[in-house]
Image (cartoon, rainbow, N blue to C red; front, side):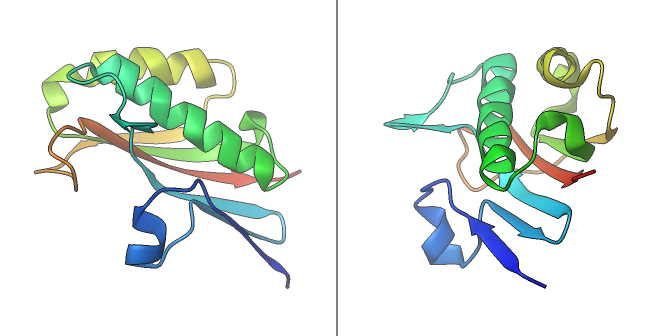
Length: 127
């Protein structure tokens, strides 16, 4: 099967050896996506703003792979402070409120950049 790789231009992609998203057949897997913006971290200290930025990047990657948000079947939201989950949930709900993918919110000890408060993975299946 054809393997389509999507890059977001993250400086970590070549260093780590990963793609923002990979499509094989009708399945799209989106790697852990951090709130990276031109010039650094988006929305410093703001879980809601960082979550929105992660979801913007994910939406663009899925589109480049030939999908749409409506194709998302699963998300994984990793937070450095689970007590702030409702802030991330508000942004997640704005993107997925009617789509309602399977979703998991978990707390992690830390992310690559200490300024990142959230990182999100997604999976989609093109119908």
